[in-house]
Length: 330
Image 1 (cartoon, rainbow, N blue to C red):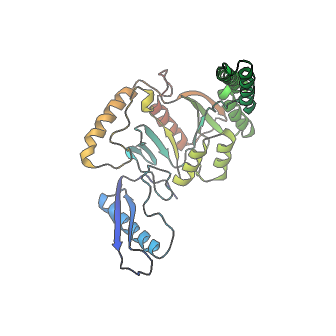
Image 2 (image 1 turned 90 degrees about the vertical axis):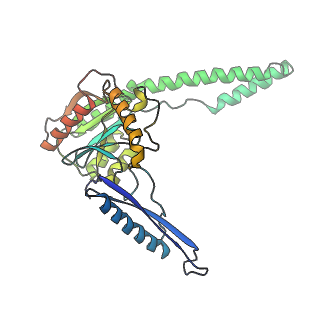
Image 3 (image 1 turned 60 degrees about the horizontal axis):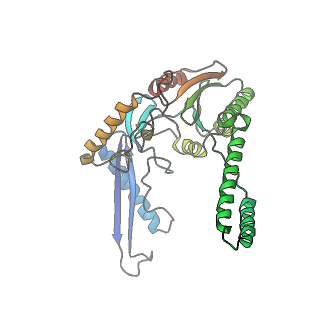
């Protein structure tokens, strides 16, 4: 199944009321479904009407189906990516996601982001019981005058110790960046025929695979994601949407924009009368985004092989992300 990012979207509603004693046991049923098309809104509406009627009949016949598909931009199983299309270049599609950033979508060029891991708490249950025991002891000696204050002080002390331990553990083995880099290097050592381009993102690393194209559902992709520690939600998205994605413009809150993409929610499409509000927000965002990069190229790893499709996507990605500049990451 090929990646589909439709230009036109519509939603249909089928509602019927039933007499008492209807075979289904229902008094009424309402079902909504989306439709989509690259040709016209009319074609999208026709699909929505047909899908709504089919789902209605199946639910009425006893099947357990959702009455309404989730209003989300992607990761709804069975639905294509539902975002505003900013640009198309052959199979490559740039969309604006629900918080306003631009995202590159490609059916066969493999991207993966690796977020740095967060420190895990070193707090121990024994800290609480030690604090309580000391508080009781001090309380008995002072007739409870200092018991509560002792417990608060000891809890604060142990919280500080736990924080120090957490940070020390988190810095072990080179810290989060060192651990992520080690996983990538281990993969390259085991797969010397792979050609990877490594990028730094604001909170992690990005990999672009150059030596061949991939089907998002093939075993090599799943193995790659597991080996480098790619986000599990992203891996699921790739399989469901039959594509790979990479954010190619800054996150709004990282460049001083405190408001969400207007109007809320940022799911496409929106009513025509709300478009001016959205366009004002986008214009402000794009103006401020010019001073930032989404990722920065670090180095090439593995082989030097590449194919035309990956080189074309790489050039577009690097240009949109400003990956070869010294602009601050966002």
